[in-house]
Length: 192
Image (cartoon, rainbow, N blue to C red; front, side):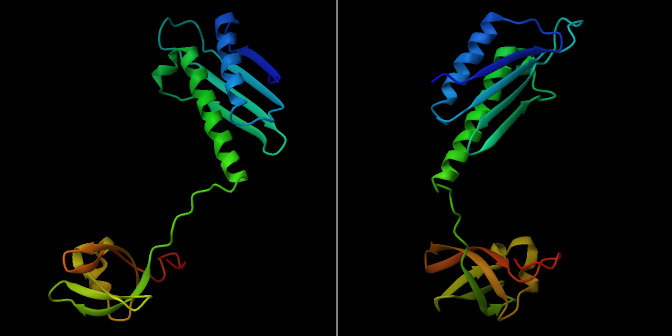
């Protein structure tokens, strides 16, 4: 079923059959990403035509779907000189709309990427003069770390028993922490 489409040309821009065909073709591709689009409004906005070169085109899209409501795309990049071509501006706006519709479709299907929480532990032993220590992980293992693995220069603030988050890798002599973050409170008072 074709998407109900409304195309307007604004800002002194004259309607163009070639540009309208391109917009209709791009709108037709949206059905692959969302099959229940109820309307699509496209406004191609030209700029003052007194200058010969350097005029940029803006494109506004309003796509309505029953589940998601309105998807608004406003491609009005201030210094993107590729948008001196109205066809490129239309392409970029519809690409952004497709990405937004795909993201919504993934969320609706529960296919959202979940980032794993980094392992937590406590500093078990610290050899400050030598620049290294060991973390006791939640599962009771000891993991080596070097002062260079501690982010934001926080090695000097570590003490035995301090809570830490870390990224573990396999080293030559066993597990080691490649990145260590001092856990606790941030300067804003929220836990890390």
